[in-house]
Image 1 (cartoon, rainbow, N blue to C red):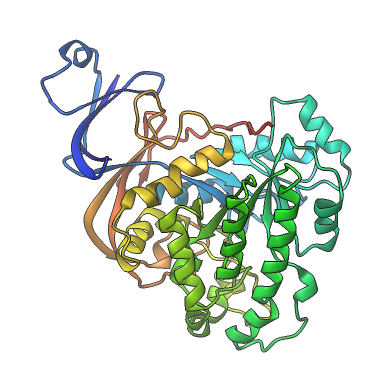
Image 2: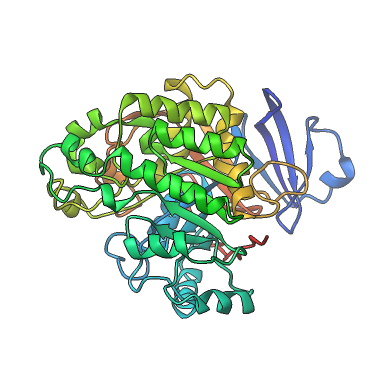
Length: 437
């Protein structure tokens, strides 16, 4: 058994010094205060980790990442992406299907799974893209040993949007929706103006797609809206939840920190889909997190090479890489957004994503749960330097941001997998999707 001693855990409203006892299956079997208590259990301990009064946080579950493999490994691969995840305090990721080839059928899903199994340092789930041949859904339903985390819908793709809105969807799956309606897009914009780029993918495009997705959810289909960006979208989510519609939503770190005013300075480095919005929208998203009406915080980690991101706003690909800085950015967010109840943020990155994805016994530091534990030194001060990143995406909008706190160690299912910059063991396993009506 493993004992993590002298760790500070957020219990109730207070950080308390706690000892965490973990069995050989990687589950927490005891949380206790006194070093002298539980002598029988302590006699069974064969490994001790001294947290030395540092924080013990639940491993983050990032339910929206793009680790690019297969097909775009020059941007990122599952090894570099999952190492960056550990460095940011992430222990479980759910990876998107816009690979090469697209992951929109059972055969491609299994091929991707076999690749990732050999490379991931974190536990992982995999999404599929909505298949044009709905018989592929039946293949997954027959072979439930490899089930996706959910079905990704890119609503700016008119073919996918049409299938999602008009077809009878199997309700055994969760549908995770990128809500932008391409009917509202403009084909041209000023390649040197972020305001012009944002106006070409306007807030009206998101609002239209959000309303369409909510109408699908009204049919009893499980819908999750990812990376919402506007006050208008949040109001629609609130109305839907008040009506009892089974819908959840998330927001990205970059939309919680930045606005299109920052985009004017950062240009293509901050290019993302959907774009950065107004300060009013940013504050609305923060209030949505505070109130719990926005269920989760994600990175939408979307890496590209520095050469690609240095192109102008017309030519550069959209995407921001953030996963390597997740926990330090979360503490920064608590400070700048004046979020006094840190439990709200912890739930949004661990407990609630676990619930949305249907992952059992993960997302909490609690007896009976797997010991996905991050040891965090909140006193450490540093500045972001993309050149030091583990991720291949070294050009980042977080460059030179002053942060307080770093991930010192990570335990994945009770095994020490990362410590002080070193990746000790590759222990990542596939987590089968489990959503069923």
